[in-house]
Image (cartoon, rainbow, N blue to C red; front, side):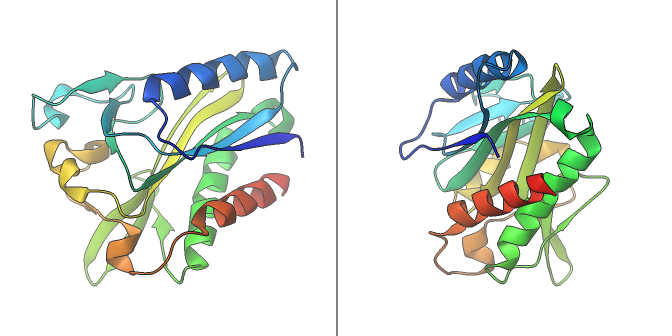
Length: 206
């Protein structure tokens, strides 16, 4: 499969990542470049997708970057794994719904390898974990499609600072919480990136 896999060791500025994805999108559209799968981290930043509303910002002093991905407001920061992509849906029957399901399956399959059960929710996009009666989000998904090419991506909370979510209504959902993998199960997640890439590529082939 002709996909470039890129892993950034140092945090990447959000604006730089976005610029790179948009440039790659045009190159993929013109068949001048490979599709892309990119694993990285951002420094602390709040981003707002196309369907956010002002009342979801609880602390008005925080800086928010408005972006063209789908979804609402979320937080990115150290300890959160970001997976961005530029994937040509023209090669995949132009099926956006199937592609979102593929992302959900990739995250669920990957977490299962670390003995963590998780599930998608039709009403609230993302991947969730249930502990007793408490349901918390473990992974957020925000995708945009342009010229039938899907870009932006998803994030998985590994050991990020959950206090930061108190400044916003994350993804516009006020009746459920946010958690991270370390809170669910304190173990080593060093292999998570590679497992995630492996599962994404393998699901993309199916």
